[in-house]
Image (tube, rainbow, N blue to C red; front, side, top):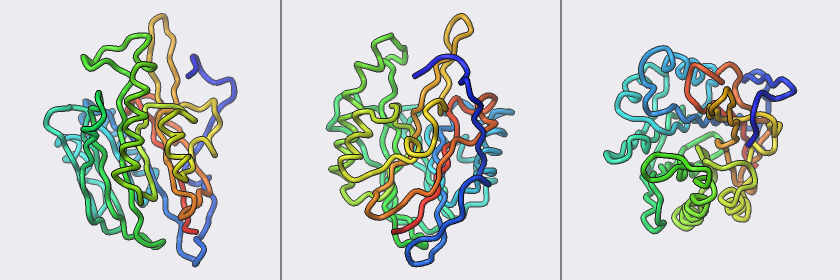
Length: 267
């Protein structure tokens, strides 16, 4: 975590990703993860979120905090294969997969075995040019109290929940190829270390300078907490990442999170 603007500027758009092909000559696969903020499905902020997804032009889009209003708003996007999961109890617990490739075996994964877990994950099989990829969209426990408030200790006391969710996910989806979404933890956290031990790389940690955040949290006295919470984790035995970035221009006026775009190729 860090405060204030970075000393060095950061700029990224899709054109900066290198052209690449997989080991069999198949085209690369672009993956976008974006927490769209459940309360922002109307007005100018929603328009900016749509702009970000459109500019990313990803093959697979993983969204967190969707709901029926967001589903209606996102219907204008040109994705033929979509799947939404909207829990009725947790307003911020919705998630979605938008894909240019066919989807199958879509299922919600509840972490009922983890005390304090609040949001489900969404797993799908995506039939890509690199073969069928097992993709999981995650939104791990936020660093908040169950009441919705935040204490100075909340990030620390909820870390064990996120670790439990990551471990539970690896048990539920041992064949996952791609796990992406809002991890609510920074690079190298215990939850991400669990995935690393299972053979996953973290595209954000590998390609994006540590000074660049994916989430802004305004504080008192004009301070802003800048955090790296959104990650694209890929199984390195199956996939390679040739580039990743945080799309510029969406730091404000859209979601409180920023869109993370990664380019992957098959091994």
